[in-house]
Length: 547
Ligand code: FAD
Ligand code: N01
Image (cartoon, rainbow, N blue to C red):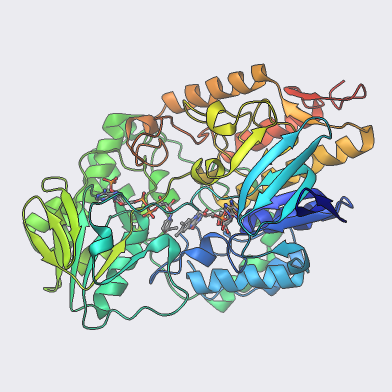
């Protein structure tokens, strides 16, 4: 239904979902089933989110495709054929498009539409949403499925505009094939994106120079085409696999939880345990060697040293190997990377490693990159410099309550949420995998499904009770924040500077954002809250859901 609001045409619906990645697509499908008119607003020209934007060479998932996929439809998971154990970006994007078509989602998605503001009007209990296309929507509920890794970040280097060559960011890669044949290419960053991209670009480039500030741990992915018999067998027990995955901290089946502490094993047993896991693929298997890898510094150091030794064995030049061997953070406290030939790439004579911790990048020049040591002549620069993660895409939108605080004000000292879904003082607003939920510390499609299903059930309850608004109480939010911090402080995670803590963005408050008790515990907690009629939420009508 459309009506005039000032100079703008306003479309009134029940639910606005922002984002058409895996979160937004499933939210649209699931919330439609409540009979709601749901519309999705998406900045890109297609569905897929992460897999729409990150088209860089080598991009692929690090959770096995048979698990990194929706579980909500048995026929979908039976019909879809993944080509590889860890499928590439193009195949994951093909899957997202298939889902959009199969469930007839496109008719309610507005592409090329970026949300710039979402303002709640208490008088009408409506969210007013405006976009960069000049459109205006009004909805009772607003679901932010804006993604945790969706706001790419190019560091504010002096001189970037002067650069005469082409430059790219991994998170905003062009749709066309970029050909680096015969070019001198520079890559800034050595996170997961760079580690996937470097071996592929090295095959084309004449010279490849990697500008590394912090070395990262990476394990060989052991990726391969999927064997048909293996898939047939897996699919015959798909529902059971999914159930098993639900009962795990990472939302991934097939990895029995560790039963032993590192100190209980002999050095030989530990060496054996790590060797057995090396190259089998999957970072969970490695981090599951012992119970205390992410809580005990000594246990972690032994695992870290094992990986450093593999790097030293792989990289022929000892000085390069030493530079690639991480020494300033605990293994697993940043996303543990999976690679296909990353360390081996540095054995090629046309691949160079530059230490920009010792000699920082000072500026981008017309002809390349200048560090405090020297100039590097480049034809192309790839920024693999990551994202303003977890809060960036949300704070990029002017979210506020009319005559109330803005989200930017509410989060001035870091994000505070209830369950990573609600923000106190912001009624009828839901986040999919927001800060304070397991989100990025799990198989994210599993985390997305859990959030969407839980929100669906809450809205079904609201429908049946005639409630107008639902929001978290400040007390519930503050208790949840304390709990998230307590859990994190029992681990090594907060000791590491990473995008989990916001420390990759100058000036961003340093707060460890994910909830690391595990998706299984979190799932149980959310289910328990639903059974208890949603304590921690307050509703605006007398027939409140929790009354
Ligand atoms: P996204 O996929 O980020 O989608 C959010 C969408 O919202 C985007 O399309 C964006 O354009 C849109 N949007 C944002 N702001 C606005 C706005 N203001 N207006 C309109 N639209 C907006 N996770 C795993 O579990 N396993 C993996 O193997 C894995 N691999 C990854 C590889 C890469 C390269 C990256 C970057 C991330 C990876 N992740 C992985 C995390 C990944 O982000 C999630 O798995 C998942 O795809 C997130 O889905 P989403 O819908 O929540 O967010
Ligand atoms: O980003 P990152 P990413 N000067 O933030 C460096 C997911 N993902 O895009 O560590 C020099 O990890 C920065 O250095 P430092 C996954 O969750 C998954 O690689 O800040 N260098 C770092 O090396 C992942 O964690 C896959 O010192 C600068 C790099 O840039 C998340 O996305 C694949 C710099 C950024 O690394 C983000 O990964 C890809 C500067 N000024 C992504 N600024 C899978 O495999 C930044 N850097 C599934």
